[in-house]
Image 1 (cartoon, rainbow, N blue to C red):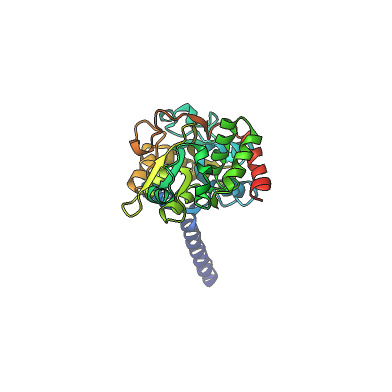
Image 2 (image 1 turned 120 degrees about the vertical axis):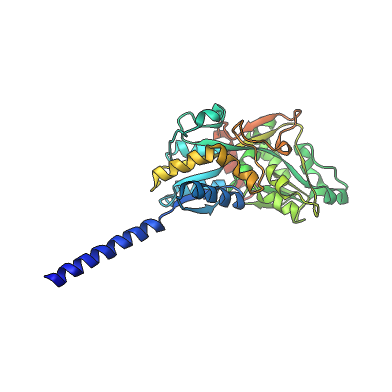
Length: 332
């Protein structure tokens, strides 16, 4: 009996140790749809402040939405980054768990869901990122109109995000629908643009990288990605279309299937906080904050003479229909 008791006690100690080890292996799972260095910076600062370990997977925003939607989100606690337009779709499809952030009053009402489904934690303006030297070699001026991208001299020298996989691409499509007056003229314009596009990228930040590597002369992207990659070796130029452009409100939200809802809520609070929105500057990834008490990089501010036609908090229904037609009619 004594031996049995000793064995039983040993098993209990071993079992308890395994439970502790298993708990230590647990981590908050974050789908991140932003720059990889920024994703790591957010995770590291959150862990430093809370002690909660974070496991991050980087996916473009539409790929992240698909993962949440198609049953592969059982291991996802938080979605961070990417345009609020797609978060609104996720909320309507029951994929998000509402959480009113601890400091929500510091964020403008237009930059957060009234029911707490998502919270805006940064902004971005859609524009053109150009290699001025490459354009000069082609005899092309830096683009200041959407139609400047249709110049035949730019054949094979343009990169844009794929609207099917990228929220940035979705915003680009939405701008064309708004400025041209409907889906049909927008699709006609996208077909003409397609003649000049060398590469449709899976993510919205990748076109700026193609310009920085000298693969193309001009890209459509949110301009923080162009500013981040500007260098003396290959100076990059930001311009905006005079007809108007689009903007994103980058968001964060808790997954409806989160296995760590309290941790996830703490992460959302952190992302919306002043400390969370200052991480970009700390890791040298410039962004426009949604909070007024965080420094705004003047290089990313929209010029006063350029108006916004759409934002990522607009109704996405019309744009979604055009994206679906783009996939079958323009780039099947």
